[in-house]
Amino acid sequence: MDLPTRPEMESALAAFAERGAVRVRYGCEWQATRREGERLVLTTSDGDYGCRVAVFALGVTEPWRPSIPGLEDAPHYVDTRSPERYAGKRVLIVGKRNSGFEIAHGLLPWAQEITLVSPRPVETAVLAFSPVRVRYLQPYEEHARGGAGTFVLDAALERVERTSGGYRVLANGTSRPGRLELEADELVLATGFRTPLRDLPRLGAATVDEGRLPAQTPYWESVSAPGIYFAGNATQGSPGLRKYGATSSSSSVNGFRYNARVLARRIAERHFGIAPERPRLPRDRVVPFLLAELARAPELWIQKGYLARVVTLDGDARDDGVLPLEDFVDSGGPDAVAAAIELDAHATIVPVVYVRRGGRVDEHVLPPHPLYAFAGDEHRRELEARLRPLLG
Image 1 (cartoon, rainbow, N blue to C red):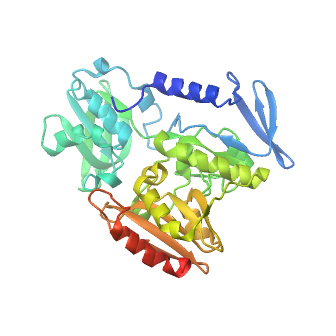
Image 2 (image 1 turned 180 degrees about the vertical axis):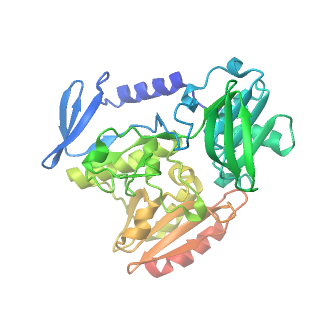
Image 3 (image 1 turned 90 degrees about the vertical axis):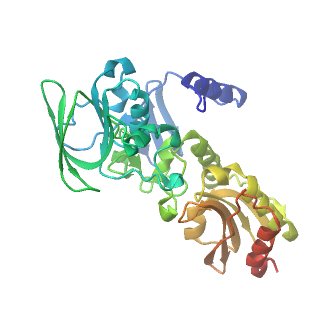
């Protein structure tokens, strides 16, 4: 199995809290939020808690439904039942991202017919950019090969009607124009989720993506409600540069755990005056250091084009650690270099360095390598040439 089970995840979190001596209050529900001067006050089932800053690790857990007539009471992904419930039935799934294909994959041995429908086509030509993980693509393969009873349609839903035996879905084709009328015994909305923000919007916390996510700065602070930060998969509300449409891995634990480390450092420095360590680097070690990061650093490889290793070169060379790439590119600062792993326009994995000199940032894409061996002589020479104006 390639994914941990829920009990395994829970056990890991409990072990982390115990070994890290994290003060955790269980059975304590957050109910409301208010401001009192410079402080935030959280009303909970265990009383009020005041703080300078609050980090909301709320998840993206509330079912979200598009405003299409007839979907108000349709079963959502969270209401999916055991596969036996769909045996021999025609199942229509609204949505073609991971959750939609995950359900379709699980129902392949059971359902008589499976149809997935949403306006946008599935981008499988470049899998690195695809919103669908390879493990769920068997339904798409069945559709492409003409397998009986499996359809993947690009169509915009107009409305959904209940019938005596199930559902009638009226839609209009997008990739191939034309009106469609689809019949199904069962309907499942795989239309995603939203962050349960409760009263945070009343405190000024803006949202994006039709209200599904809190809008955030590169450091995961609300763009409109200072002192309110987010952690966990809600951090996908800070999109990063999104070059060539590539998204971050902030919706998954393998990505947002690295965001959390950067966030903790940011809060400590900005709100509590705890300066992070910035080890000095001999100038002749800057290039080998960055090449080693490009070759092996998990933060850069998991959060491609999103997190970067930064070295400042204003006076002494200093390792500034892993920081959001968007902030480095857009916010200015002293002479420095940021190293990142990215996907180019063809989804080829490439190392990229951003050199900031005199306030100007220049981007340099280093050569790709079939084995991702970015610490060799070719990349050393290339990086030395790019950094020579700063390193001397």
